[in-house]
Structure formats: C-alpha cells, structure tokens
Length: 397
Image 1 (tube, rainbow, N blue to C red):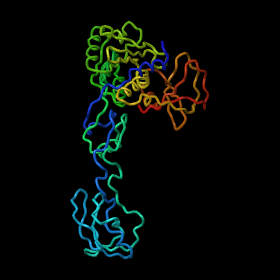
Image 2 (image 1 turned 60 degrees about the vertical axis):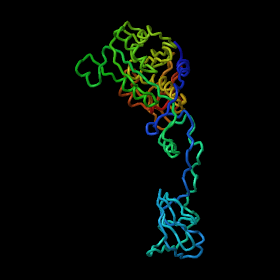
Image 3 (image 1 turned 90 degrees about the vertical axis):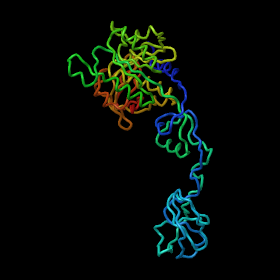
Image 4 (image 1 turned 135 degrees about the vertical axis):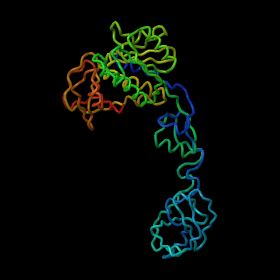
C-alpha cells in the first residue's frame, strides 16, 4: 500500500497531452490551446467612434456656441466619403469610421439639431471619444498563450483576431465500466428490492467532462469475468482512459483488475493508504490508462476528484495543479484523531472556516451532494480542536 502523495505522483507521470488538432472556433469552448493565438487583423480596424454623436474638427469648437453644418452620416461597416472641413460635421454612430478631417466626437446629448445645423452649446471635455486603429491589438500581436483554456473571454479575443479555427490539445476519450450484479439504470431500482441505482457513473461522467474529458462509452457489467474481459477489450479499443468502478476490493467476485489481465495490464499501484478510496488502483495497457475506483458513491467520486481530475487535466493540456489547489482554513468544529490512513473528510466550507459533515460513510450520496470541500487530515494525526488550521480543497468538481 502506498501513500496518497505517492499514488498521485504516479498518476501525474501519465498526465501528458495526447496530441493536437484544429477545431472550429464555434466548437472550441472549454478546450485548451496547443498553440498561441496571434491577431490576423488590427482591432479596431480603423479609427472609429466610441459614442453616438457628431464627428467634428476640434478647431471649430474654440468659441461656443458652435454652429456646424451636417454634411453626412457615418455608420459601422459603411463606406464613408465625406470629409469634415471648417464649419461642417458628420453624424456618427458607435463603431463607425472617423471621417477625414475630424479629430473629435461630440456626444449627441450635448448637441441640438436645427434642420441640417448641429449646435454645440457646452464644452465637450477632454475626451475625444475616438478609438484609434489597433488600440486593442495589432495584426501579429500575441493574444492568447498555449495552455489557455478557451473560456468566454478567450473566445472573444480569438474571434476578434479573425480566426475561424484554433489549434487545441486533443480531449481524452473515456470509457466508463461500472461493475456489480446489483446495479441497474437509475429509475429501475424500484422494481426490485435487491437492485441499486448506478449513481456513480453519472457522477464520474460529469466530473470527467468538467475537466475536459469526453466519455465515449458507458457499460454496466455483471460480475461475470469472461464477459468483463470482453468488455475490457472493447473499452481499451475505444478509449484513452478506462475508468472501472467497483470490483476493486479482494472479494471472490471483485474482478476489476482481473478483467484486464489478458490484455496486458501493467499495475502502477493497487491500494492507497487513504480514506475513502483505499481500494483505488491505477495501471496501463499499452498507451491506455486504466483507473480503478471503489464502487461506493462517496469513495468513487472523492477518489476520482483527487486522482482522475488531475490526470484528465494534464492530458488536455492544463496544469494538473489546477485540480489540486489546497488552501488553509480553520476548523469550525473538532475532528477526531486519524489512524494510519490519510483521511479526506467531506465538509461545508463557509468563507474561511470548514465544518466536517457528520455522515462520512463511503456509501453516502446526500451528504456527498451537501459537501463543497474536502478537509485533508494526515495519517496518525491527533485530534484537532475547533479553530485549528487545516488544508482544504474546494469542490466545484
């Protein structure tokens, strides 16, 4: 049995990007850039107005009121032929090009119109309300570095750079295999007193998607070793990462690892000195990663958050550290002493204090949904009093 830190190090050694691909910008949300984004155009494309108003010559505003003749209109995207000369101005709208000769925009709120005359009674202030060409960025400027997640703001920058597609890291394909004769599709358990809804698979699929993985296959397997071996072979063919839930202990029908033996499973570790998650295991079949999780909901999801999330993060080009940002806070209530296994307590984090949830059983589902943090308590640590400093991981999954 190895420590959690040792297990995490072995997982992170496998958390390498899979490759690159180009995707349309419309499909790039949440992806991670594999190459920098540089601007193909200037932004703004020309000197443009920052306000609705009138494009004027500043020299014509030396004496107020100023009366100027409106000689045309400038609209965004429209060809502008008018030239502002002494005593004239052009009606202009936000984003429209500045006409030749103009060097200031007078906002429409301080302009009176009398037919084709624009009358300016008040001082305009120091701002010209002109956005110079390239004020945001110039063609060839670096806008986004490799490794940037394409969130809403990054997509705006990439689109503004006039890019139709971007180069991103490939998303790992995941196959989820849940094992156990008792498991049934959620919604069907009520038909039999012996049935248990497969609640783990939807949670693991959601966590994988949150960190950039793509679930391509999901199977619910009975405890039949030969059938499970066939399913393991299919999963390895279809996916980059195979996640097995259940069958991870040492019972006579726990076949989580045995189902991969005929396809060349190379184990990296088989047990971890942690609670929950001691039966978790990790290995390889060729260049495919195999993650074994406990079957109980809390054990499975907590272990997946601690090990599977950083694995996926690294494979999609993100820093695995993003999945393990521990912070220091205070205990809002005491914790008992810890045995040899490092323990990850489900907790409710409120500002800078964390309250351990009373029900810490590995099969918990409601308590798991209530938790928004994990408290990390080292093995062999004594009881901790209220107000003690602890390390906490926020669970935004």
